[in-house]
Length: 144
Image (cartoon, one colour):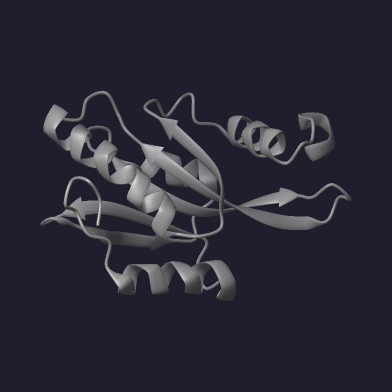
């Protein structure tokens, strides 16, 4: 349980593990509802479409199996945790999401990259790729 008292159900962790290991879906969008973290929806959308579908005035947690090329040029993925926190969100809601973030990260294993963003225009594929490359000890040009 988080410091906010908001719980993360075991069933949600099982669904994440299915996504991560069985590759049944590419992403999960989570929200806080009735004192719990719940699955809003699963997605197979490309990253750019996923970003555009996020609400403009409410936070979300996004777990996304982000496609990359590894160091030797083979297709691979990295688990991305996107903490979507638009400035237009009500303060109380922002506080609930921020207070639960640490529990999300510790409950869902295998997250290699975390990004917090509040502007859809800034949340680009290039930004995510550069962040993942930096975490992998690669420069961005090697990563392409």
